[in-house]
Every structure is written in C-alpha cells, then in structure tokens.
Image 1 (cartoon, rainbow over the protein chains, first blue to last red):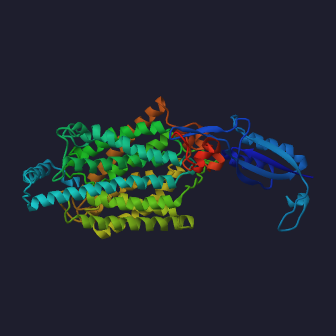
Image 2 (cartoon, each protein chain N blue to C red; image 1 turned 90 degrees about the horizontal axis):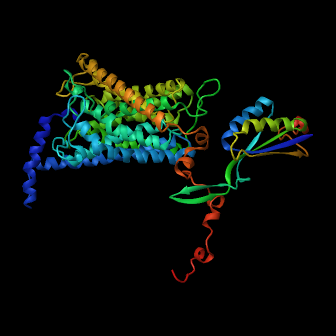
Length: 113
Length: 466
C-alpha cells in the first residue's frame, strides 16, 4: 500500500522540508508553485498609497509518495520542518495511491519508490 | 584632476571668468581663446558629470541582477534614495566639508552653495558642484549591494545621509580639498578616486556587511558558504556596461578641463576595463571550471576601479597590467570574503574596496615619469617615495572609514535597528518594507477583487453626470 502526502507550505521552508524528508528516508519529492488562501482569506498590500487585496498567497505544494505505514510519521516530519508558528503555515493531507510505476524500469508498488 | 587643486589655479580660472563675462553681458561677444576654452571646459565637465550620475543606473541594475527577485524593489529603492539623500546632504554641508578652506582635516565655508562655495579652475561653481556631487553619490551607493536583502530601509536611508554629509567629504578634503594628504612631501595622488570614492564606499560596505551578518541560508550548518544566485544576469551585465560608459565621465572628466589629456585617459580606462574582465573570467574559469558571467562582470568593474587612481599617470602597458591584476585579485577577494563569512551579495567590498586600494598603490609602481602632481613609480626607476605616500593614504582612509562607518552602523543597530526580522528576510523585503513586490503578482491571481468596477466603466460606455 502506498500513500501520497500533499503539503502546501510557505515557500521559504521548502529547503528545510527537503532536508528533513531526506533525513527521514523519503526517496523523492515533487514541488509546484501554487497560490491559495485559508482561514485568513489572503491579505492586503499597498501600491502607490492604494490598498489591494491579495486573495491568493504564493505557496509551495509538495507531493511525496511513501509506503502507507510511514505516511503519518513523514507527515509529522514535514509539519515540524514547515512550522513557523505564524499565520499561513499551510496544510498537509494524505491520500491513498492506487498504483505506482517507475518510468525507466516499469517497476510497480514499493519497488517503484 | 584634483592634482591641480591648488588655490593658485582656482584664482587664475576665476580671473578668466571675470574677464570673459562682462563682454557677454553687453551682447557683444568679445571672444578670446581663453573664454572659448573656459566655456569648453564647463561644457565637457558638465557632460562628464551627467555620465557619472548615469552610473547610478548601472549600480542599480548590477545590484538588482545579482540579488533575489523577492527584494528587487527594495534594492532599487535604496539606489534611488541614496542618490537623493546624498545629493541634498552634499549640497547642504558635504561640499563645504570637502572643499571649503577650513583646516588640513576638514573644510568649512560655502554651506548650501552660498558665499565662498568652491570652484575649480575655469569651472563655474555649479559645474564644479554637479561634478563633485556625482562622485559623492557614487561612494554612497556602493554600499547598498553589500548590505542587500537584509537591511531595514529606513536604516539604510539614515546611513546614506551620514556618508554623503560627513564621512566621504572629510576623506575628500584630505586630498582633493587641499588637506594633509595633498601636503605631504610627496603628495598623495588619486586622479579620479580609486581611494577617495571607491575605497571609501568599499570599506563602508565591509563595515555594513560585518555589522549585519550574513543572509539567512548563506552558510550551511557545516559553516561552508553556499551560492545564492542572482535573479537576473542580463540586468547585471547591462548594469556593468552602463557603469563602463559612465566611467568615461568619471576618469576623463576628472581632468576638470577639456584639454589634450582626456583622450589618453579614456584609453587607459578602456584597456584596464577589458583586461579586468578577461582576467577575472580566466581566473574563475581555472578555479571553478566555467567562465562565470557575474564574476567576469565584477572583473570589468575591478579593472575600472583599479585604473581610476592612475589613469593619467600610467602608460597603456601599465593599464594593461593593472587591469589584469585587478581581474585576478577581485576573484580571489570575492572567494576569500565568502570564506570569512562576510556576505557581500554583489562583490562590492572586493571590487571597490580591495581593487580601489590596489589601484591607488599602483600609481606608486606604474607612474611613468615625474610631474608636478606625482613622482615616477618604482617600476620605472623613480624609487619608492610615491608608493609610500600612496600606502599612507590607503591605510589612513581605511582606518578612518572603518572606524566612522563602523560606529555609524553600530549606532543605527542600537537605536532604530539595522536588520529586518528573519520572517521578513525569508519572505523578501519588498512587501514588508515597501508594500508591494517588485515583480507584481498576476492581476488575475491578486487583484481581481479590487479592480472590479461597474460594467459601463470597463467597457468604456458613456456614463451620465461625469
């Protein structure tokens, strides 16, 4: 069984998350630049004295496929590394992965990690 | 330039102007060779001053290009404001401290360009001032790159007032203002400011970077330096070209006259800039395996800074050697400061501080012949007199700027604070310091709520009552 951990975090913690995941034994990760909002509903910035709403704040989305039994442990690793104790630290969710293939070898399942 | 900074010359020029002006006022031009020459001098030096002011654009681009996008508005703002704060501070008091008669240490007189304001040779007071304020602004703006990406804007603003009002003018008075360095048995010679301008800026940059500490992430947990690549190499190279063009005002303009010497000065400047870039490229190629673009650009600036002191005194071959050496020195210096945990994102300390000092010493080595303004250098059989004087200047200017700029930055740190919070530094300075990012977010992402307007307005349909 495999799980996909998806984390949406502040851009500047990505290096820390990467280091923590590597230390914890994750074999790879994919990141995407994304924008979004949570409970805070964005914030305002000012330009030439006028305010404007920034509804979608830049974040980085991290996707990691792991063995299902390690998913919660690694989610906690990400959480520790990404936490700044300020608004907008992000979210993490875990979903089941149906099948996984490794492109070069055709390996499947945990072999493909 | 200021090798001619003697009061006799100034009085002589004033006399020329006095005789030329009444004729023009009567509407019957009494054109003499002297009046034409005086006007030519003023035109040339004013144009040179404009070229030097354009160097501000070069500095802004180089510094923006070699730092990260998230603080790009901040570094542009620092470049904009250090010129403005510096110009007003130099106009108010700096020019008087630098060029007023005063004593051997500091000048006095001509505050706010009022009575007794200094004028040089055939140049008018306004032309002399505009040329000098361009140099003061150059010294001030060198520092912003070394302190990039982590300095509070208001603190930098305060710094830029002090360097242009006090620190730079005092150093200038020692030499170009007729102070103690100009009165040594063998007078100090810094034609256009390797030490007066660039070393002053470079040492202030060093003190700023030391007091601030490195950017977060510059050094790994093992203490090894990590590269933080700049976000726009085209900016950095374009800025370097702008600086090169500006230097044709900086060096030839420092002749302070439209005479036969300016062409030769332009040639030594060109040669040193080119060899500086080539040799920096070769040095980093050998060291790191690739011809690094940003380092080659630093090399061109290193060659320019190094030739600035001796551009009128050395031969073309001398310029070739000075530029080549500066290109190698700047690469070694950048790598050394990186290891010493002095985080200088744009290489300002190495380019301006180290190569400025080196170029100043080179006058004592490469000056080809004895003149009224400098003695023949060591390599041409002239002995070590000039070299010793140059070393005295380099060391005392280093000590003075290190102490005063160090005290200034420590004072700012204790009072209004010098460095932004770690959170702000990580997020980039643009939004927290200035309200909006340098590269605005896409409107569809960020601004659709606030630009929503009545449909009639959006489609341009006529609306009643407007």
